[in-house]
Picture 1 (cartoon, rainbow, N blue to C red):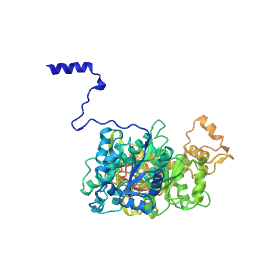
Picture 2 (picture 1 turned 120 degrees about the vertical axis):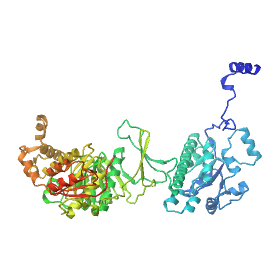
Picture 3 (picture 1 turned 90 degrees about the vertical axis):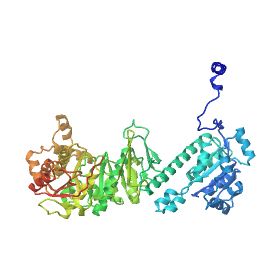
Picture 4 (picture 1 turned 90 degrees about the horizontal axis):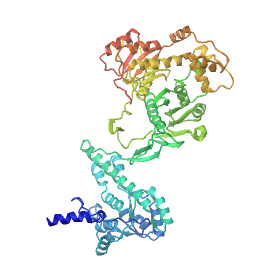
Length: 636
């Protein structure tokens, strides 16, 4: 009773700030007060690095400001060979490196020196009692575990490259960042050297905290790589799947200006699959770049021809390979006289749907030459991705859009350090699936299923092109192709027959652009290229309001008569040999019935519907050649 009364009295009389705090049983001691000094001089540093890039630059800078350096193994040898003063850690601890170097820094004189809180009486006394020197800077990078795995190292070699002492020291120094500067990347050296010079050999709290954050991120990524690798060796899924990213560069915004922050990351320990050579790519630019590059790379591999794509909002407006133009096509596309294979492929890709390609993203499978760059110079586009650029092409492209045209150089040999599985985070859920960039549709996969089995080489080429194109088109999707180019892409419809109708409307516009009346339109001097493109399309569509027609007519020296229904009927009847590919099976014959209106002779689909027989029967009625390639190609 007396004790209870005393506790009640204490609760009322003793200010909360002075009451004794209680801590969980897992915390044996109350946390000591941390040092809060902003500028902390560096008097002793421990350096142990596997990557010795610019090591001597850092060590020389430390020598100049009088820092004593401790080091281990190969790092100590490199410093000694350069004539720089260094003390071996084993001489400092009194214990030699042992067990094949597995034990060298795991010692109280090392970890005590890193963890001791400056100004804490108990810690200061422990240092004196045990001859522990305070270590003010730690410079460590880790054994190259991920690189060893990537190079195909055997199990034992990979295990030996799992760093133990390095992460332990990094975590210790980072925890004690109020007093210790921890450097884990040679890219950090210049900033730290500059700060030491500016502050008489001291670093700031802001820098130490920033470096500590980077250090904890490094050890987290390192441990995640080891954990994932271990699980894979046992053919198990990791208990916890961890993904480690490193910031590549910030973006102006995401899909829309209000979607901030926005960044592009690469997998930790890896690089991006491209280099930015010019301009500042945005979020949607990069989505277009990655999808379009995959399309042209696969097309090049499958068909052996230079390939190009014109992308808008993560779907192709057009895609093509380098097939020579007819005289009519040259006139309809306003093609230059002399075109390289790359320029020819992009001109075809751009002319599948030139109205939709306005402001596109271009992708080329081959090195971009001067001719391709000159053609791009005449078109309105946001950027380009390709495996390389000639100096002449770069000079042209970097001058485009007042120097802001985006130029990305793709790495054709890029292999993702993340492996074959793609991850996507949406609304608190993480989706994972194996990517299928290595699953390429090739001509030998096309199995004829119809009575008509006359599948020409040109038709095989068009079916493969169309199938690869829909693989990188928002589903549901279908694509029409002829003469090595897509001529109609129907993307993102819930009904497959609506995809066929949408893409078919684009086929009509493409084909009618070659009608004599369209080719004969008389434009006034000074009407720009894209305005001519748009005017032809609107002439073909014909559904102008009175106000629109009045404006439209101002572009012509001779106002044309409208196209008559017979013009469409007669010209469309001349179209044949078109190939159609679908990203999934046709659930009903209506897709085939619709396709027959647009000159379709060849059809590709994966099969798998209960209506496959009925769809094949419909193809037989129209004397079409239908093939199955047995690969569904949904893209979301």
